[in-house]
Structures are given as structure tokens and as C-alpha cells.
Length: 578
Image (tube, rainbow, N blue to C red):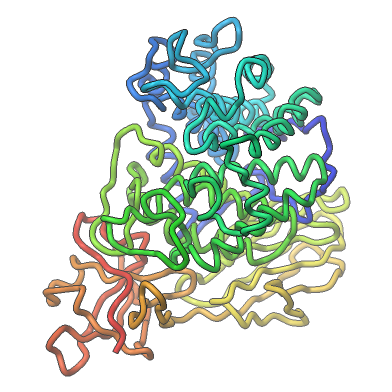
């Protein structure tokens, strides 16, 4: 089984308000747990790493960005192994890392471009720093959970090469696309490299990257977000690259204590949630942040790039850690149960690059950025199910699950048995060898309110049971709201409605409703009933709708957006409102 992760050498100056648990300390059952499991067994464990390594061995690689995939797989697969302890996955990881490091050149270069086309913007060779970002993330994650010193040495060589290149030979902005944001997104792993090694040079380099934002022609990320407070007016609005930089700014704020960086990030978050967020928990059209409330649903608009969904989840995790505010956990949940898992084929093997809210899903088994990104977000999901803060344990899921924690030096296990998604009830059972005192906080997402359980007090999205002494076998019963609801549309979806159940946004799938000729013409009332039926094929819901020429409502079947379109047929979330 995985050991405890290697501790950072550099403490945070801006300490986390809540701390996620390590993957090995959590197990998720239920609906989301199954999606996490098949991500490991049907995707990460069976990935053929030879094509991912080929570009490093024989330069140039077949894609300009082929190098990013190895680091992404290492990041996701290491987290998945830390969660499951699967010896087969560990063996695959160990072999892949050995081969990966064997391709590293003496000066530290671990990219896929030939000499003369490195660390610049050349034809078919313009993602070098970006690739090394993912090299670093993969190697540092593997080191943290295995203690492998060779992986850390390889990461240090990359860091030293970057320091020797920028800004001595050129500005880092000249080595990245999208107003330099692709290159400057290396900020996140550079800060983590500093924390892993204690080397001040890497922190100095991270600060240089942020200064480079404001060079002539630069993205001005912090300056723009502190003034305009709009992501669509920052740089060129490229969502994936900008979110990646925001994640890095959170890491830099954590290690330096610079709250101005955090203010810029939270301005971006607020703008996205208010103006650029789909009901399914993602953003971007044609891979960019659009204008206010510009959220087209069809495949032609390429909504919800999976890389964007993944990085949006990472950003919310950063902000949740730094603030403890439930609204960030709400957005993680919305994305996990909807747009992220909607991009994942229910078999667990393939992913969509862009996932429309109507039309059909195009699952792609090729080597694409999104196919490598999505598994990373699902591998992170167990770490946010339970959290800890000073004197409190936080329950951040209402699914069947368990968690192991250390509270005041005592081992504690929490076992949650839940009726979700069929019934709004769960029971938390505490296991501890010795009596232990702590407060218990349960997040109450808007769909689940009100939550009832003994003497809890609810505030700011958390239901809190004040500090008390817990004994082995103590139980706490939870009752929460779990029912269907209608979501009225606005702006792009004016005069439309969507149906939901708990955290799931629902869709009408043509394959389950052959009696309706056109999904586009379906109409639902603002009080349409939604009921869950037990179906051996998965979650299925009953409601009523009217066709184009129907006077009376007719029965209609719905499924979670995450399951819709799995057969290749058409589906639709937003329906015409009566």
C-alpha cells in the first residue's frame, strides 16, 4: 500500500484553512466511486505508454504537444495508485518513469523537439515550456508518493535548465503561445519544486514569471484581473492556459503569503461563476472565455473543453484549501457529477474533447490533451471527499464512503453509509480506539438543503456539530433533501428549462425516448415532476413533456448528463419551457 507522502521542505506562509486527505486515506463508493474506479482500471492502468514516450526518444514527436501526455499520465496514474494501492499500476509507473528519465538529456532537456527548435515559438515546435510543465508535475507527484530520488533529480534538472534559459537567453513570453500564457503556466510546478527542495532559486524564478506577465505584449494576468476583473478581457481569453496560470498563482500565494495574488484569482473565479459558467459546471466555447452569458449549447460551439473542466476543478480545490468556503466545494461537486463525467465514456476508457449540452458526444480514443486531462481530475476527486481543519473534520460528500484521519494523535475512521442517490439519508459511524474530541462539519450543497441531524447549526454552506468527545461506534444520522427540480433558463437559454435530481443535471436521451421525433421541440412545465426509478442499467428518471403538437403531457425518460449520449445518439439538456 502507498506510504505517507514525502513532506514539503518549505512551509506555507498562507496556511490552508482546510486540508484535503491523501488518496490512500479515502475510499468512495456509490455513483462517483464507480466512475473513479473505472478511470483507474479501464483507462490509466491500460494506457499504452510507448506512444507517449516515443517523441522523447525519437525527436521530433508526431505532435507539437505530444510531450505533455507523459507528465499528465504520471500525475493521474500516481494519484490513482495512491488511492487504490494497485501493484500492477505501481509496476507500470515504475517502468514508465525509468524509461522517461532515460530520455532526459545531460542539460536537463526532456522535450520532443530537435536542437535549434527549443524554447521558442517555431513552426510545429511551440509548446516546449508547456511540455516541461507537465514533466515537472508528473515527476514531482511520483516523487511525493514514492520517495523516488531519481524522479526528484530529474525534476531539478528541468528546473535548472529553465533557470539557465529564462530570462538570460530570452523572455519566457517568447517561448509560449496565447500571449505567453502556455509558457508562464509552468508557475505551478516551479513553486512545488521550490517547496520540495527548499531551493530559493526556484521561488525567485516563480516571481520572475509573474513579473513577466507585465512585460510589453504580455498577458498582464494579475494586473488585468485586479482592474477589469474579467477573464474575457485578460490576455486573449484562452481558458485552459489562463486557468493553469491561476492555479499557479494560488500555489505562489500559499508559499509567499501574497494575498494580492489571491485577490486576482478570486476576481477571476467570481467573473466565471457569474457570467461564464455552464449549468453543468464548466466554461469555455471554442476553448476561450466568451462574452458575458455567451454559453451556446451545441457541438458547433465546442463548449466545455475537458482540459478547462479539469483545470476549473483544480482551481476550486486550491481556493477551497486556502479559504474553507463551501462555494468552492459546490463548484467541484457540480463539475464532477456533470461536465467532467459527461466527458468520460461510462465505460471509462474514452473521453470527449468538447462536450455539448445538446447533440451527440464524440468520444475520442486518440492521444489528445483532453483525453490526458480528464483522468487527472477524477484521480483528484477522492482527496476532497473529506477534509480537516483545526479541531474539525469536514465531510464533503453525501455518498457512501469512508475516511481515515489522525485527530490529536489518535487514529479515527469515519464510515458513511448512504442511500444516495435513491434516498436522502446517510449515517456516519465513528471508529476510534480511544475517545477523541473534534467538531464535525458537513457541507450542505444548495440542492441538499435543509440538512437535519441532531444539534447541528447551519451557516455558509456547512452544518456544524460543535466539538464533542466521540467514542468508538458513535453514529450520526443525516437527512437531506433529495428530489427533482426544474432549473429555469436565462440569457442563452431564455424560455427554456432544465431538470435536475440532487447534483445531477438531467438530459433527455433519444435512445430512451423513441416516441418523440424531435427533442428540440420538447416542452416541459415549470412544475414538471421528476422521479427516480430503479433500473438495472443505471440511473433513470421519469418525467412528463409535450411534443411539438401534443396537447397532453406524455411520459419521458431522463438520465444524468454524464450518461446521456453514451450509445452515440442525440440528447438534450435544455428543453422549451411552457
